[in-house]
Length: 557
Image (cartoon, rainbow, N blue to C red; front, side, top):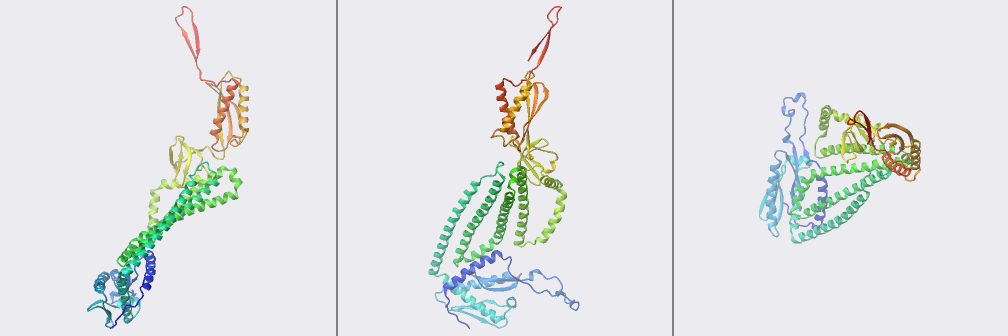
């Protein structure tokens, strides 16, 4: 018979418990299942065919499970039993342990004795005062799992049980509860301070992101890429701070719950409950942050390429538009790839075998491809639109009866904003014939009406002078890339002669140049006394009321 006295330091146990809590939180979040000790499977040979139990399929319910007997959430010792009966054995041991703890805690200074009876299958008995209770019997499975003999296993259980009962009684003392309460207050105070600092940093990041502003089509490409890079990096920092904020409060709460013996079991339950959501959340946040970092990396690489070829990019606005379009499409592809990878990683972390899933997705993909031929055509046509540079984000195009500014393009659709502000979405497979009004350069095509009775040579001279003066104007010469062409009289129409003028401009500047040229020409015509022609008609009529005389008159309207 063994007799034990309370001679352990409470401070040592408290430090060991804190270390245990941190280790338990880490292991529980990243450990998939309880360790399983399976019975060895022996491959049957021909001489053993008579023993059918060796080669028939084994019942999965007979797998052995190792679990922990806990007191106040702390593990006392492990037991191993078949899966189908493990719950019953754990419940029996826990009921006996509850009786022991109630007896031990209800007495002021009880005498505690823990003894071992038997050799092959030792039985552990606990005596509290005058009452003796059998806690458990050590079986062969308990010994096989740990690879030790019965005597060593019994001594380990006795020692761990003794320390656990003494520590549990000490933790319930008033001075221990007060000290742990002060520790909890300190943890909460530290969490509030750190949370306050994080909130300040988050507010500064929000202000910095707002200062970057939204992307505009008139921004220089270098500035656009720099803003994208900075915005995505700040977005990553912002989300990491939010994650740290959540981690501080969750971690502080779990630590505080684990400080007290009455609530420590809730810590184990919460960690077990949050294990799968925590894994999925970490994968989701990690995937999102990886996508944002990839966006910043794409912007950085593109910006470096532009710096190395700065002169070419400044002179070729078309190249800038194309790079902007390619980066947008590349970001979409990266998003799809990383999202799919994150989905598979999340499934694997919660114990789903992804190999059959991938095989099933391959078969499903064949069926989907047959049913989604329009989608495939959209993707193929979108790829060639980008590859051949038919148009890019920022171009003004006309597709059949729809036209406008290209706001978005990917492998599936093209989105236009028409002059009325409507957003028009066109599947890429429907883009067969496209008119691009801003590829490399544009042209202002001007038709100027002139009255029939005007001096045509004088009018041509005035038109030429106005065009040349505008091309030399400091405000407009940067938009006009070539000398204006006065083509001459292009047509005879009802309202008068039509003079055609071509002015070659930078992309998307033809409408601005046209409006300004018409304004200047109208001012010059007014100075020279040349009115613009108005529509007119000649109406002939016959007066039948005159005797023996026909008279034809006409009015000009």
